[in-house]
Figure (cartoon, rainbow, N blue to C red):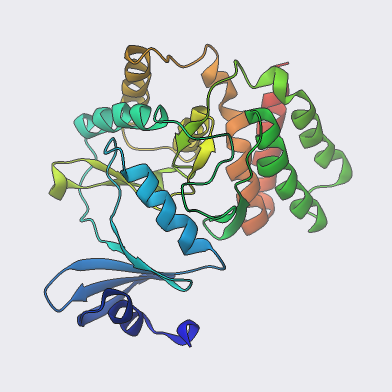
Length: 295
């Protein structure tokens, strides 16, 4: 039975080659060294479709070469094997290159708002939370139906929001077309671009790698807001280089994008509320109220 595999057995089965060493990296992650010295990471799935979604997202985002992502070496319903990237120190030079690359990646586009990566499932994941990639005609409809309302319902059912607090998010959804800024074509999003998924790697000429995507077609301001959620090294350099590259490509960020950060942070804050409890509920409410102030 595949679900009973240990990481060593799973890695050998998926790779079709011998593994010399496996060690824990924390949580569901394991360091794998093959008999010929290849360094990999094995990741245990949090639930159904998780690795189908992540593998499809890694390949989709990496296909353009704008920003490096780990190569998928094998996956099934229980395990994902990817190349392991050595760590390095953040630098302003790498930050600027990453900002420009992220702008180019977003502009590769997607078939629709909410579209999953090619070959990826509709029922996907963001971290340990389920996430639905369902296409919609416009971003406000997608964001309300699939990024706000499901998580507010879960939080309310668990007693994390009362009726009045939940109504604040209903107001955001009602006013989304007016507060979302100018309409944009769907961007090719990483979808979970917080600082923990931005990997600085000296061994690869100091480039910044993206890890653990929750990729889909969406609004590019969402990835930028996620970068700012918990802070990122050289954040100012990343954002300045992004804005300059977008401008040079003829697709400048819309006026007021910095004012809409709270709106785009609603989704990750609601996910954190559902996963980790009430400390994030207050932050989600504050973000919702900041978005309503844009009316």
